[in-house]
Length: 247
Image 1 (tube, rainbow, N blue to C red):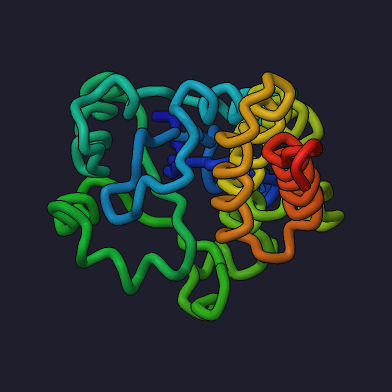
Image 2: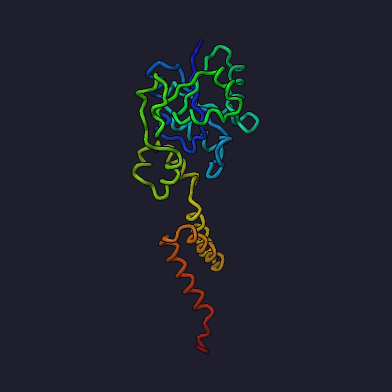
């Protein structure tokens, strides 16, 4: 019987902390394979800033390339939503009756587990490998005591992409970062509005551009580029509506 460790998550985006935990699990022979289970959406989290599933799946595959005992599965993306862990485990047992499944989870999970859908059944079906994370690091499994603690999370990754922070550059696989930029993922709202303003400005739609810039500055008051373009457009509009023959 093959032992599979399941690492569930939205992977929005996947980062080196995820891979480090998977590698440690394999190095300690706690599982023969680790499967990255990309979820459509965590039922306990807000969908805000969630990249489309196909992009998160593609990024996970890029991040695990060359890690031959780490696989990426889209099983939760093919199942009815919302995606509950119990349903996924039951489906996996049905598809792979000769596999034993373990669930990899951060140590903060102990405070959340009782809010899971049919959590008692989850504990009966699969045993947990709890790795240290954040302020709950002491709650990890004995087998995972020495697992690497990576001081990064997907939220910080998203927030540190525009502009790119050194810490985020180190935490995210270069191929994943290239994918993010190529597909214009995780662009903050104020930057998106500024880009819209630039397009409207180039097309001569100065009023629409000005509205976009005002909205961008409401989100980020110290947005220098937006303020500069706003002043420039105001100058254009002021000149346009000035009667040079009747000052």
